[in-house]
Length: 71
Image 1 (cartoon, rainbow, N blue to C red):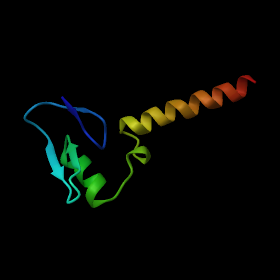
Image 2 (spheres, rainbow, N blue to C red; image 1 turned 180 degrees about the vertical axis):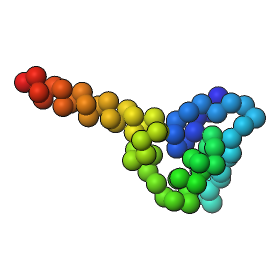
Image 3 (cartoon, rainbow, N blue to C red; image 1 turned 30 degrees about the vertical axis):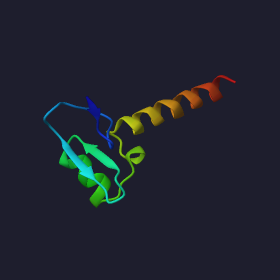
Image 4 (cartoon, one colour; image 1 turned 90 degrees about the horizontal axis):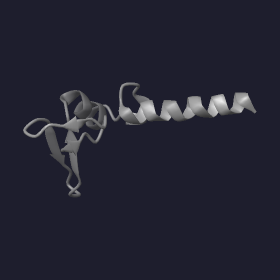
C-alpha cells in the first residue's frame, strides 16, 4: 500500500490519485481534499490539524511542555 503524500493515510489499491510532476516526482493522494490542499492552495501538512504530521508534531510539543513543567 502506498501512503498519501499529504495526510499520511494508507491508500487502498485501486483508489486515490497519482500526480507526476515535470521533474519526475510522483505524488500520491488519497482524496481530492489532499490534492487541492497541497497543489492548488499550497498548504503545508504540518499546519493542517487533521493530518498525521500535524498530530505527531502536537504530541511532541505537549510532551516537551510537560517535561518543562516537571523540571
